[in-house]
Length: 134
Image (cartoon, rainbow, N blue to C red; front, top):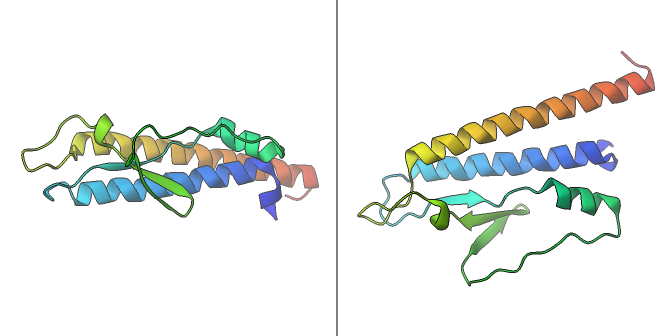
């Protein structure tokens, strides 16, 4: 029912993307000692493109990949990418997971999820007030 309202649809999509990113970051941390494991991350959610898709009839801008292998796959509509270019270094065993970097990213995910939750709750409260229920 609320999927027809843009703020709920966009906020819900943002929360799903953040949950997927949290899952990928947890996998990175779990594999911090695995030889040749490459740190991964989830492609950033762009509010502008989500807003354009919600307007109907306006196609969002699509970026082209520059090299084969940049995008490693998708899961439930979320694109998981190799985080090699953004990692701080590589261990002698070929592992690119930096625990400090992963912890900073997890804190960022938690902060953004809390913000999305506040937006969702406030929008629901506004809708309840508009309808007249308490």
